[in-house]
Length: 456
Image: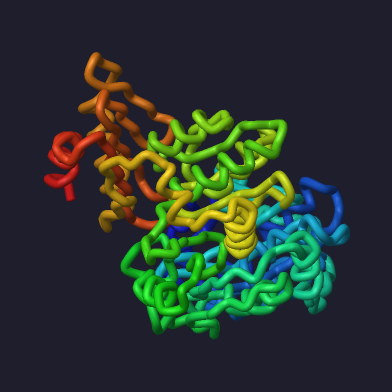
């Protein structure tokens, strides 16, 4: 069994297949997961297993199945689906008490991983470490005879939202599936609610031949921008490899950053719900938090990570939240998890209700001078040591800046802010900067990058 401990992340398990882990590990993960579910519910695991378009995904799903079966678990194979469809099973089907999605999300093709739910919660943190410890000690529950069956969830998933969005107007839109899992359902879902989208790169293909499957990076939106303008579309919507992250292009072909999207949706949701708490992550702009608070919401900053934001939404009973990275969570009418296909429909609904163009809505948000999310390739060790060095330099609050250590380090200056944190999914250092002028932006960046650059 190949097992590199770096695969155990804060909110999922992920690494390079046959380098960081192999199918034998997936078999043992299945046994560990079945053990954990048995211990929680004191009953046999009933696990939905789905997978994305990566070439390694079916083999890993089969290995998981064998591990779960070996301990008396019952597996429901749902096939090639999106991660949100995998989550959907734990809410929609009474007999399913857990789920595993085999996916590398937005990572390069050689990566793959596992997003896991027990009950209605996506596990993270200590629960991920528990799985590691069970595998290391091989402290599995007694073996028993399980079962496997195929379960087609497409009709139930599509019909659920066909009813919710039955009053949508036929809005001109473009979808970019990026050859990811979204292509298995996007056309069917959007046509079911009365839309007739132009669809790019619909066929799932684990090589991702047209562009990298991350719609929050602007260079991956070139084709989507072009198609929006050519088709005079109201909006362009892109999906990552497993369709839990959304990227948006407005009617003028401009990319919409994740925090601006959260600002638009969050203000709209807060107008319609009793609970005004809207959750954002530490990578989101001060402009977003200010805009939300000025438009009837109570904005709350929280840690980055899809599992962490979901849990915060639950604990705060919040109707809505999101991350700069394109994870968008609706709990007011949906189940509180991140579904980019659903999020796209909600944005189209906002366009229908307001009668405004997306570019006009965006224009209401005050502009700042900022960087996108800057992702610097490094090593697992360096990404943490660099953040530690920044924390050492900016150890405590002063008259010039305030220190927030909720996730990495976020420095709030009088005229802007800076963020440095270690990615939970890749050997990457994440930086972001914002200020009230180009000059102040450059000054804030220099203070942080003078520490970062010599250590790379």
